[in-house]
Amino acid sequence: MDVIQAIKQRRSCRKYMEKPVEFEKVSMVIEAGHHAPSAGNLQSWKFIIITEKEIIKHIANYAFQQFWIETAPVVIAVCSYDEKQERHYGEVGKTLYATQGCAAAIQNMLLTATALDLGCCWVGGFERDKVHDLLKIPTNVNLQALITLGYADEKPAEKTMADLYTCVYFNSYGASIAKMHMVLGNYSIEWEKKIEENKSKLHKIFGKIKEKVKKK
Ligand SMILES: Cc1cc2nc3c(=O)[nH]c(=O)nc-3n(C[C@H](O)[C@H](O)[C@H](O)COP(=O)(O)O)c2cc1C
Image (tube, rainbow, N blue to C red; front, side, top):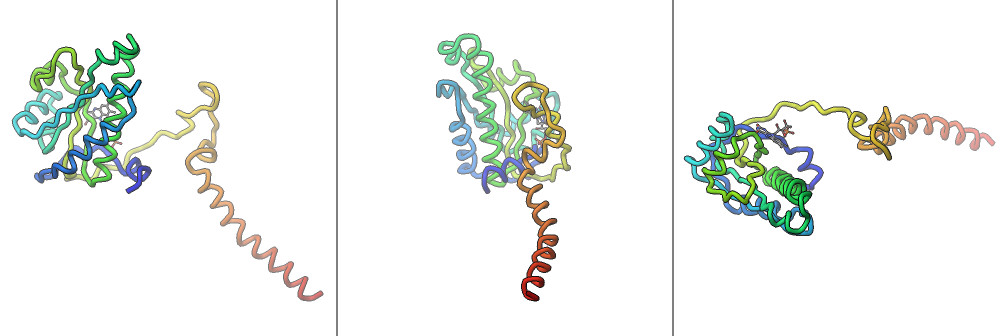
């Protein structure tokens, strides 16, 4: 599966089969996270792989009773070691770069899971203090998010997508183009359609020209 396919196929999965995930696949997911870009290449993330059912049960409870999490055979906690970023970049390192690096790692992991035929979900809704304690995370490490992982036992419903022109601008904020799909995304598709539409017209025109040439 190429990356574009993985991006389009990835969906949040909230129901998993009672089937363990091969550790090789978990390793590939973690490695993908570790390959993410990070400010100054500091790689200030930490990943905790959780497979113990009891711990996952507690996590589900602390995630504001998102009990579907209990069905996941694997949960990955993504943490950032903010002090490292702060030492190099000050406040912006601590508040922005640490989080952004982890977000990049998370998306890499979700896409890799998708490519490996695994279901996954980015979980940000949980009581931070409680999960911190449960996973024995030191106070100078920040728990950014959880990822559930497993074989999907559901097919997510179609999701509605906002039109691109509502969120893409050119050169300055707010400068949008009404027919954005003509410029982005479907550009080539639109032109292929036009070429197809005009092909038959061109055939007719060339046919008439050929007949005229023959008569002469
Ligand atoms: C920062 C963040 C936090 C999220 N937290 C949760 C969560 O706590 N529980 C949940 O079920 N989904 C969570 N999601 C998943 C979103 O609900 C989901 O990505 C969104 O509805 C779009 O659906 P899709 O992932 O299938 O494309 C979170 C996603 C992000 C990026």
